[in-house]
Image 1 (cartoon, one colour):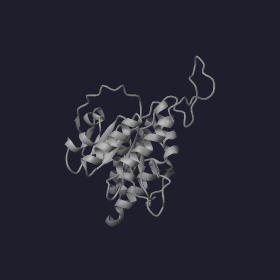
Image 2 (spheres, helix red, strand yellow):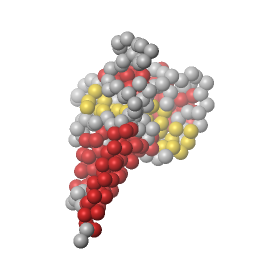
Image 3 (cartoon, one colour):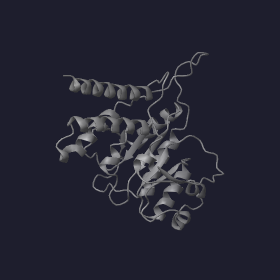
Image 4 (cartoon, helix red, strand yellow):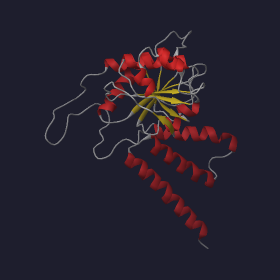
Length: 271
């Protein structure tokens, strides 16, 4: 749930990925990240439970003039709320964790987001807390891991440095990506999956499906024993997240779950 939205931005905004800082620890780091965003035309800053609260005088000072980004920052209680309206989410990390996910370098991630935004999708990229990085449960809500080509013996990046790397690669991508011939019946083709009569599912729609499925699996006794439930849930979410479902596909999946559970309960009631 968004807690605050106080935009006062005089700078013209173009479609670009949202920058989502998860539990940032210092206002100075938020400000420097905002400055990096301004350098490369990233304007949508989202903050998840900043440790020292919000707004922050230190963030304004460190932003060095990128005040429209600070003033337009939106505050959220959790990652789920911060990504709810997005179709595609990347997670920055220095290691692959135990998640079965696509891994992209910053240039490839920027290219993928650029192509998706050109198709009217909403994208975002998560940056974890300065000290420990993102939690596995946060990564489970994402489609792709982004890892920079750094010295493997010293892979730690400052928060603003990480944002700047992504912003730099994003800026390099801002050129036409149209393919093929445009006609009166259809527009130019672009790389990636073609969504003809639907759209990619939002994160809120995916989370709704996850909760529906997991609720029925709890009733059926599948998610047992209790100590293994969190990892089983993460595995299920990662599996369905990889399919890149459309809004229609999510509705179909929820219908399948409802149909199966209705049939099972009807049989249980039969004499």
